[in-house]
Length: 262
Image (cartoon, rainbow, N blue to C red):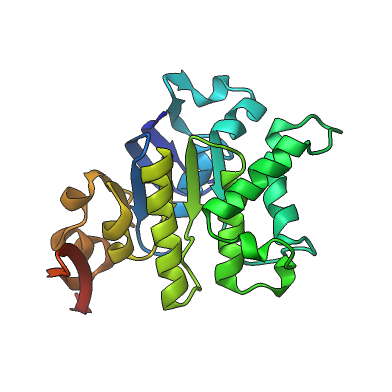
């Protein structure tokens, strides 16, 4: 799958334009990370590119076709959205929540079929949460619920996953679990992913590409090592950082160390 945004622009009615000439391309198996300060329009960006908000100008193209040309049911079989694990999760078990991911494959009054239940169980197995099958979502930790939401999206059998700050409000271990899961799904299932994140180090860990949004309305997109630099982070976040590169157990890592405000 190839997902593109070309010259995307958007502003809420009565306010100045917040997204200007956004351009990005994500191919199968690639992870693109979106970064920027609070209030810069990252979540709005996700809504625009998925058609939940209409671009003021510009367009989204999916596999060579304008996004608007897709029937909604057809589109949501290709793309699955993973929200932040917060708010009311209702009294569903983990399995029931994951099974909801099959909704786009069912008719209005059609009940899940045995094959839908098998796909939901497989999604739970692939995300390592089969042991949560009968646990109520209202009794889960934030990390557990986030993994359930990822499994629900995976049950759609999509070609692309879209994540809105999936590691926010999670502890150190659960952040790593989420990041590893996104990276593994992209590599082993050839699913592309777009990830909103507050953490440049997380983007460098899992991303192939990055889109950085600035408060002045400008943006920069491209390969992760070209876009996320000490200079670009200083300009975007007004923080002087040091990007630390090191090798541990014969594997290369990169980290971002914030030094001082500028």
